[in-house]
Image 1: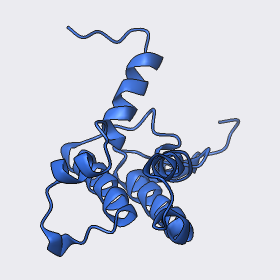
Image 2: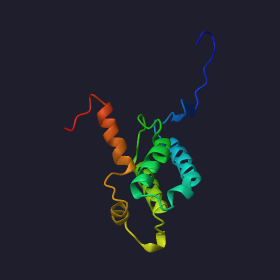
Image 3: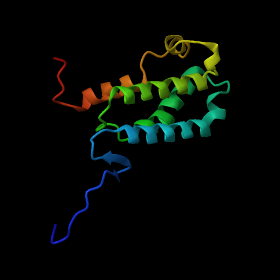
Image 4: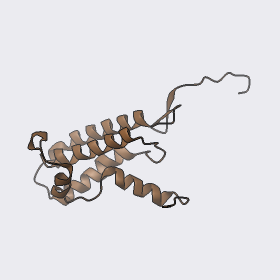
Length: 138
């Protein structure tokens, strides 16, 4: 370009998202969920106290999930990435409601406990459908 040789890189950060030459988003998903867990831990004392469930859920969705899902529109999600997001989702709810892994509660039981029908991933897929004018169910 203009006489300069451009270097090809495996990945780079653009507008806060990590883009890779493979086109997959695994590293960005890992970084985002790590940042969101950090945000949750900073709010932990507020989220596990005696606030009403709806208030805690609202705080998690606005302050934690928004950080995890920022820039997620172009993500290319593989099964392992989807599983990672589901695990992060359950991690949020379990921590918020003080449900230990040793309690042996299923994901369905935890969703019922927090009165939640959607997961972080399903909410993102619905958002993609709304934004993508060319999306087709068929």
